[in-house]
Amino acid sequence: MARLTSHYVALAGGVGGAKLAHGLAQILPPQALTILVNTGDDFEHFGLTICPDLDTVCYTLAGLANPETGWGRREESWRALENVRRLGGPDWFRLGDQDLGTHLERTRRLREGQPLSAITRDFCRAWGIAHRVLPMSDDPVRTIVTTEEYGDLPFQEYFVRYAWQPRVRGFRFQGAATARPIPEAVKALAEADAIILCPSNPWVSIDPILAVYAPYLPKAKPVIAVSPIIGGQAVKGPAAKMFTELGIEASARSVAEHYRPYLTDFVLDQADAALQESIASMGIRVHLAQTLMHTEADRRRLAEDVLNFIHQR
Ligand code: FO1
Image (tube, rainbow, N blue to C red; front, top):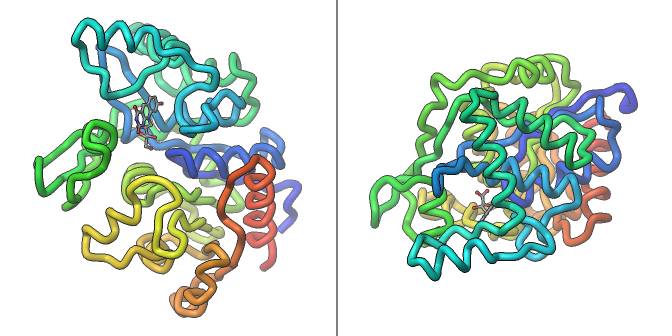
């Protein structure tokens, strides 16, 4: 397979996914990469439509992301939120001043009836992002987390308000059954030489995308996942905790098992070398890599590693 003429579709959500998407975008020309982003974590807050994963991916690609949190904007100020707090309003979801501008303008255009994909395309152009970033659907999909303590919680309530502390019993992707896939994404998947599942949370970042696109994944092309679990721990966020609470061992092997219906190739961290054989015995090609991405160079290096592994066949 000639790497230079190949096209890849990366499925991403959250900070880990955004980092690998950025690595891929640094080494692939714009026409060689489509990034398909989770919108299951979108929600309405202060009457605004907030799309955290979409914004995290866009801000990261544009070099605008807050380097400490991975989400939100760098050099952010918080004056609007401070005022909300002073007025006794809800301040549990931290919206920065610049970030608020994104939500205001997106919501204005959504209310005019413009599709989220078109708005995202224009925002990307304004932020200088050359690669194609697509929300998984123009129709709303909302991830609901069923918890032991509070029953069903909208995703951001579970994740931010309750700091992912409630015990998870299951997930539902409200609207996914009827959400229409983005036609450009369906075409990109059909023409892709490989699909890359970024090291995002399998349960709440990648599964909502698969809930819409599983029927459109190409049957005879490599589908490669990078494990977001290293040494039984999530690099960031609740992925490992979710596996455990669902009665599944938190490990890179469980991630491979989770994606097994789709997967041909799997990348796990060198720290998990001991799991290599048992994953390979599922009929999956396995590659060990340094998967932690502390720096921008780490993102590029992992992206290179993933692409080289795809093409070693
Ligand atoms: N995550 C938090 O843990 N606390 C926050 O206050 C918070 C605010 C926020 C604002 C805008 C945005 O785009 C993302 C934000 N996130 C925050 C991250 C977000 O909740 C999660 O990264 C994703 O939804 C999970 O993938």
